[in-house]
Image 1 (cartoon, helix red, strand yellow):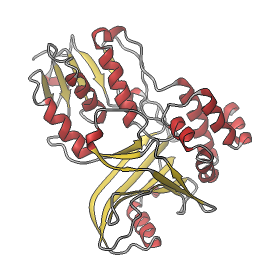
Image 2 (cartoon, rainbow, N blue to C red):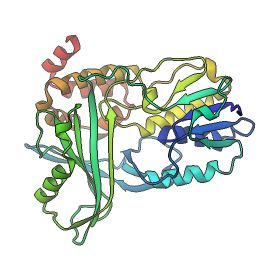
Image 3 (cartoon, rainbow, N blue to C red):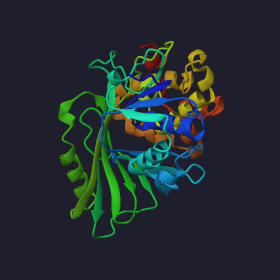
Image 4 (cartoon, rainbow, N blue to C red):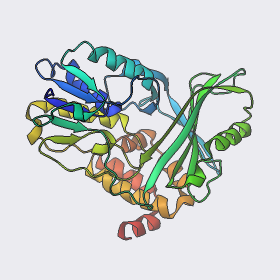
Length: 354
């Protein structure tokens, strides 16, 4: 069996982003890379959306960009301008096509379906598969189901993302709808839950039909379906001599939001810059302060789910740029403090010591 200098376990967003970063900066000209991925073909299976707070390699994979978004609760509906940090959506199909086209040019990069086909004795491994040994019934998940629909009539305001619409059944958890309007006739409609594992919440089709009916959409065609679940708890992630975890496995998911894509890109850059001395490189993290604050936030969410629509809305009161920077790991201590001051203090203080 052949040996490879580097092995990436998992050819998803994190694995491919790292391979692409290493390749375009010529880090694989004299090194070999094996990517372990079980799928035969890549096709669109995800929609990654986020505020554009920094640069990355995949601007040409952006499907749509918006300069405003809305948050809707039972008591208010607010539209927030975000022209300084536009909200963008990346089509995973374009992402996969771009990366695989690039990687095929390098004879030092090979794909395998099983790591057992390799001799990894002397390889450095980048693992993107989370170890969820800490998982328990009390852990929170962000689980979602979305459909991209096409309508005959103009049904959507294509200028405004509906980031969170809480005007739906909550069932003792946190539930909202998320709408990405790609045009007046096409949008991604997603039902999203922040909850413990609960199969009774997975009647996703019914939830979406009710929501579409409530906003007056009855005649539509489904173009595409996606479904997923993001752990809102950190997987086991420790430094090993010959392995680094990446992606969600490496703690790149922001627990309070589920956003991961930009953190993956930052981590890939960090690894590329340190690849020559990777065994002695410190573990990368998105910020200890965010981990601390997010864990408190999730305690509040778990204990007081009925308060969360108002809390999410309050985050975006005042300066939109401060809120976006905080949720994108780019805030300074003064901006952090301004967000903290907006929160209902007693329940957050209790959650710190509980």
